[in-house]
Image (cartoon, rainbow, N blue to C red; front, side, top):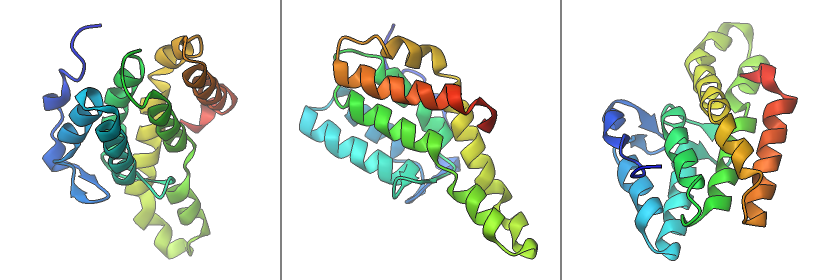
Length: 163
């Protein structure tokens, strides 16, 4: 597989935003998730979730950029928090907060949601691009990982037109 997160510096995190502002902390949080103790990794996944899928259903500009790194970590059998990573990715894939808000808004305000709707679309596309990894995780030796991966794969296959 190679060294995890080696492409992390290729993303211009300072130019994209998460729920806290510029996503400059994302590389450190992803690294903490990858290499810290289980307790520290749990703290990292909680903070990452709050930044890229706030409240469990509001994606940000940085979400799509974080997904490939989260999938990379979920694929490593020795990694901490694999179930939580897949649960976060499932939440990202299923959210439609911005699209629903735009649909409910008065016509003159719908255009103000376009950028945020694109964040949702880009995030779902990033998850869908990892379908091969998700399929392999459905056969993982960790039953909890396999179960969450099957749920995520079911979402992908039952709603492929949403990306």
